[in-house]
Length: 217
Image (tube, one colour):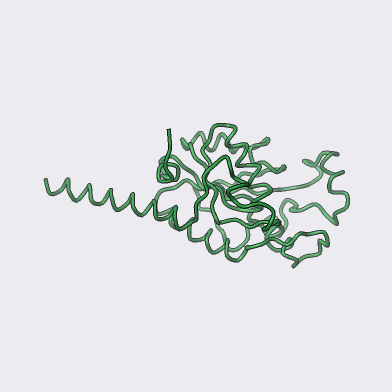
């Protein structure tokens, strides 16, 4: 059982899940595109900076990182989905489009998969669970957009599939005043990127001290 934040974010137990950090969501929803029905996302620049920080430090710590990207199109959108979006100018992000690309200079490493999804939850008809199982993941460190949308839906499904959940401040939301992070992610833990990175730093320092002590014996 993982009871502490340090255990839940330990790279031996956890993976960072970056949900939908794509141009269509981060830019067009910020009012920079043609979608007149877009709800501006709150906190994209700040969250982008924190994402780069936690990804860089996570890589140093050996943390598995998995990116999630939404793709829409006629081959994957059912009539239910089309009916829901009938008042929108277009379906976004479309496969192969600028809008589907990762935003803010995020570039997955060769061993960091990009899981494609077509619904809100990244567990619905995707390879996410197989990717997690292959890496021995027990805990999900959640990041991306939107906090009260696809990130929440993915995190909740993960919790119901028996993964621990840690929500971070590496998120943007379309409803910044609706609910607090602790309310949205009441089924998991909530921590800042700095708090998580501090856990990795402390664990690294302890390992270094142990190796030094062993060498002195």
